[in-house]
Length: 394
Ligand code: PLP
Image 1 (cartoon, rainbow, N blue to C red):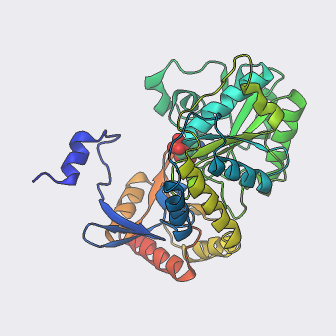
Image 2: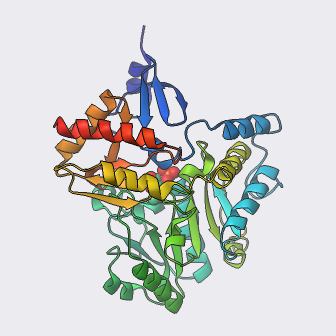
């Protein structure tokens, strides 16, 4: 009999020659369970998605309720669909007044695509500023603003008129000019290995964009929905972006993303041409119902309240001569080691010992720590013990 693993390798498109090849049968809260019933603590939350834990009962209930009403009805932006409308309204009620118009997408990359188009259309400019070491997704537009040539070279030509500047470097802000349509920046650079910018830098960036009439796009696809201890990371900096990108944790495990802007900006997609951005499935009613339930869980269950203490506990426990630095904010952390060989063998040992951990696209010398926000003190202690034992073993 052919196993699932064989079908996976034969019939499921492969993106590397060394997939993890774990087969998970069930997931609940912090834990994944393989086909033999072995439990794994998910310290990466399916890459910053399962922030409220896997299969949160309130999300499951919301999905079930919506299944009994309708699935897909029509293309985006035509019918009034209660799950979409309620989610958009709830999001705008927890965001600053200017971020009141929500365009729903299926993914983070699509949110990025829509936002870049919106900025060009609204400003009638074509130039874009992005950052070295950034990641915004893998579609052509998102890849064009990715700050790592290694992943781009095979796919050129990409979008023109894009300049890359250094993250958190005030001197480079002068490269933002009255020709710049938008600056796209991660609130904290994730795939660069969790690089946290200075508050003053972010404020200077905001001021420069204001001066040049440039739209400031904040990619909060990893940082959003409580991961850094605030509902959205821009709150740490005391500034408000013009366009906010969301995805990943937004759907409580269901696929959904969004770009959010002021209504007068978003209205640029309505005319000249009409239907400036189209999606069939964006804002799928089941995903919207799940996202609304997930947002309620984060807020009503106060999931952000203990994040700073949880961060401190990780920092206090993860002390080892091989650990050079712990970077990050809240439960978006990087354990900086020395080499990829170390990172790879520590990850392997952790997985053997029931803990899922990984590294970063642009930084393979650091381990990624992004557990569900619901992780308990005891679970953090257990997780750190597994990580330290794995580091000891290399
Ligand atoms: N932006 C950031 C900061 C991300 O981390 C990611 C995914 O890792 C994306 C955008 C792309 O999101 P998606 O994979 O849903 O297209």
